[in-house]
Length: 447
Image (tube, rainbow, N blue to C red; front, side):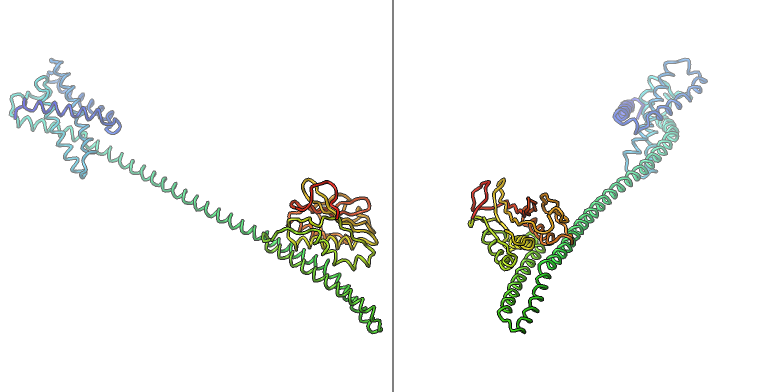
């Protein structure tokens, strides 16, 4: 193989090297450092060449220096390509990189020796090809021994730093994932805690409701059971005395009163049980159309003896066909307690029950005259309308306990309840949102 045969291969390799240089990223091949080293090597041999008299032909000197600089850059880029492209052991990459340095040295010389003399010691045109190849290969190996270790050390350190950076990024990603998992766990635990707190709150509300129910039951027992029991005990003792004195007619009358008192107590207990069951099983009320006049007459019959003994009169001004949408038993509890309060606080007077339609709502009025202490002087009653605001007060003479029960049941049935003070009278008012059987008018519904 002669030098002219290898010139085309040298140009082709130089062209490929330049193409690789152009297409490759600058940062990846560290071109600034490569150019600096190529410049240093190229300038380092200038004094030697000048000392041998090659400065006489400046064109050849400058041209050969440019060729040497390009050869150094090609060596630099080929070493980088060897390091990054080949999947081999590092020592194998070094060996291949040095071999390529020798090949590049030969190719660059063969491609340019006809134009420039770049070997300073002795002209090589007359030497055999194998000697030229050995000398050029040694030149390439010497250049490779300068550049290849630097490249491999730099890239090894860069890979180490990149690996460390990758580990840091992986740790950051893992920490972010763990943070996300922890946030999800905290969110789930928070949701569970909120659910538990909500359940606890509901349980607390239910417990408060049960305590409240217990106080209402105790108050109702004290109001509707204890006093009648005391009366029955006294009446029973009196009946025994009458029987012992052979006053049988009076004993029979007293026994009849005891019987009526017991009947009233049965009704009281039934009302109490209905109220308790409705509170325990909230939302399970059975609603229907209730004949209001008939229910009032039924409850009024329980107070017939008491009304007569007190010299009182009960008048009902209601349409017999008037019905309201409610629960029969609980509405009966309301009416029973209102009639009971009106009867207890009336002596020799008239109790009036009437109704009218106001703003498409049926208003039922139970009125009784004031007796004894005026309403304005009664604790908890200020002479103005009071809607569901009663609180138990032991000083309320006849008012309070039954009205507390009425207030609670009215709220349960969605019925507005209030007490109004009129001149010389007390008016208990119930407002029903749903009713039928009466024409809408502002006048009273009369019997």
